[in-house]
Amino acid sequence: MVMKYLQKLGRSLMLPVSVLPAAAILMGIGYWLDPTGWGSGNAIAAFLINAGGAIVNGENMSILFAVGVALGMSKDKDGSAALSGLVAFLVVTTLLSTDTVALLQGIDAESVNAAFGKIENQFVGIISGIVASIMYNRFSHVKLPDALAFFSGKRLVPIMTAVSMLAVSGILFFVWPVIYTGLVSFGKSIVDLGATGAGIYGFFNRLLIPTGLHHALNSVFWFDVAGIDDIANFWSSTGEKGITGRYQAGYFPVMMFGLPAAALAMYHTAKTNKKKTAASLLLAAGFASFFTGVTEPLEFSFMFLAPALYVVHAALTGLSLFVAATFEWTAGFGFSAGMVDFVLSLRIPIANLPLMLLVQGLVVAVIYYVLFRILITKFNLKTPGREDDELEQTDTNTASSASGDEIATMAKEIYAGLGGDENVTSIDNCITRLRLEVKDMDIVDQQRIKRTGVAGINVVGKNSIQVIVGTNVQFVADEINKIRRA
Image (tube, rainbow, N blue to C red; front, side):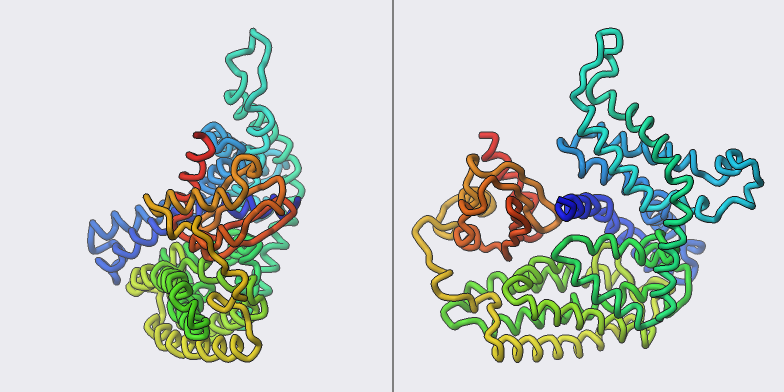
């Protein structure tokens, strides 16, 4: 249950994180227009840079986290839950601001613990969103007596959220300084390890991808939870040249070169009669990794078929971050380490020798291809196109033989493979995955679902299953919901 809740939280975090590409595009274009003056010599550049900065600013990003988590964790994804997330954040950050704490403690503001000066952070934003979602799920359908009927239901949620945050603020008054100190110590322990710390971070980042908990690890290094704030500092060009961006740069060689090379190795080692099917999956997934930095379709295609190979991938990612950090080659991203973000980051003033990451990428591509091809053939790993023949039996009722819109057809087949209305109890999705709850996992026809061309299937519990669709997942989810409502 805990893992399931944390995975849902991870999905909810993708909503606020997804606005970062907008900031990257705005600031990237601004810096292209005025790479030396950072907006001081060009009004249009200043406009774009400040517009992007409004999104990646730590305090504003915290608000987005509060609203996004509240919306994502609420059972109906209702706007009143999002409003309650904002209410929660405003209450706690006002009550625990430096000036208010100084008043409560009867001391000068200068003497207040530094932790309260950082209360407007993503961690507190997440807590605010969680509390708001709990209040929504509990009180959104409560009916009050007639005299108070106006405040019933969804109108009651922001009120109960504000009351709840009084208690939360009281707890954080004592706990937050301890948490803050621990987070800073953890971040500093990695920072103090220099390039080695960057490599350790990269390794565990990939290992946590299957659970969705990599977002929690990322928040320490990418955002202002522990004072590192690598993404915002890079795009605002503040920090130290060659250092700021080290927790991002090493991903570019992996996502733009390494994983596509791994896809090529898996295609070359696929069985002859299955190369065409494998190619359709691997080509699309490899291109998504290279162009946008979205790696899940490719990673999920082999992480459960060949988990040892995935550990190798995690180790190579850590090695890539270590090498980039050692030579102080830096670039940054607003969404992920694909070509789009790489091009946008080239003119950011604080970027240091970013073109060397392309040279590193060519080496990484060779390493990935050779290692993957050797390991797959030597240990007969079941990567795409190498599955046992009996698992690939087809019948006439497949997605490929159906007519009509491809997305609608895929959705229909996936839903049928899950057992339809009689078996499916809940449907949700993140950026690439359908996340579903079913009554009976034995009813699920995994082979029928796989024949639709999805990247993979992940059974995460007795009643929980994930279908890795790719970047079209939202459209597939919408079509399934249409089927359920029909």
